[in-house]
Image (tube, rainbow, N blue to C red; front, side, top):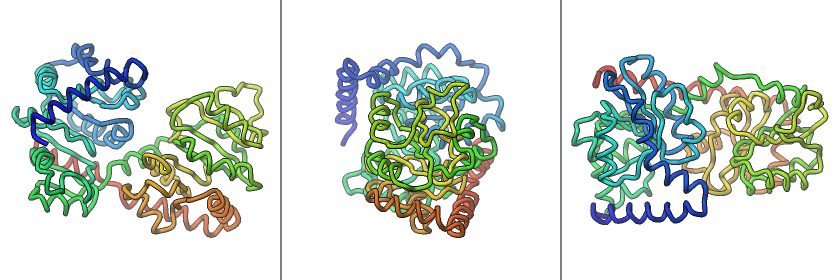
Length: 413
């Protein structure tokens, strides 16, 4: 793909988002978000320098958050700008107090890129994990703005490492430094003659470790749990419920907290009709509710999942039967044995590591989940060994944020 074809593709993308926005609320948010930055540019104080952090969506934001927050502490002379590509990230974190300005990233159209950079004038730019927008990156480098990618991970099948991937490789070459998650990513970069890299690890480990230190109690979940064993199902999709419902309806001595990835009341109602045990939605809880009488609690809100894992004894994490596994580290940091689908998890290093060490389990069908949960319920020694192992896994992988900030302090500031 050359520059002309890329620019034509972006124009088609913009048109496609516009057409989709007529019918799809999420697409409308993304289309309107293309000019959202113009409504917040007045928050830019030119008396301060600006550090810009870009993340695709909520997962990348949480990944970048430890670096954002430590950067803010270390360099108070900077304002913090956070941009999102996805509405699901922006809508949830648009009021995040750790940034001075939060907005959408405009599409990578040259004229919009120039206008955006002229307005904000960042002094340093961080792109988190995957984001390699060619026109933004080219224009950033034209302006001699330090450009850093962190928590980055590469795979052999990506276009960057194909014979025809020169267009993508030229974009990567423009980064001043890339902090990769693992040795394979480092080797792949070296294979395309990129040497300005550090194997730092994944900043998500620092984030979940911070979450553990600052965990918030949820009285409703505590009253629901009482002294019972609980499986927390986080970020689950309909495909995941097809495996979970047979377990819920079995005679397993478990309660269940279920947090869907997307909140649709009709969908939750249909699941509850199929569940034989007494269930309640979080939004239905009243002061007089006796939560200990219920066996299934549906979380019909966004934002409390990471704190819910403290009430779990096991966890099931959604997404792996579909587009891809969601964050398992929030559960693993509490030591919980973790289950997920067996179809789309291998691109996540932590999932592979924990499956290999038997701290996590890729589940093919309901009978397998029933068998494995009963094994942990009936074998306290196995459960304790797994819990200790998973907690140690988190501790052994923290520290990426310190590596990144130390490099910035020595090389940039």
